[in-house]
Length: 75
Image (cartoon, rainbow, N blue to C red):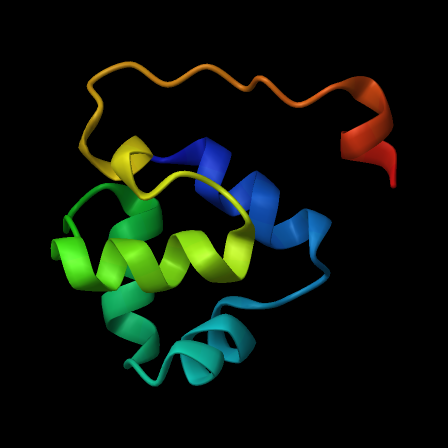
């Protein structure tokens, strides 16, 4: 499960449906990314990363740490 992905999306104030629409992908595909059931292609990871302002490589790491500061999380 990619709890970090859900957390970042929530910080942006978006639902899965809204974010999937922004990316032009089905909500079931995006939900699969969040749940860890699917891994995006490099191209799709780059699009997601651009929207979320994160590194695209995070989708391919086995262990992910939240490196945002408290200020970034609350703003």
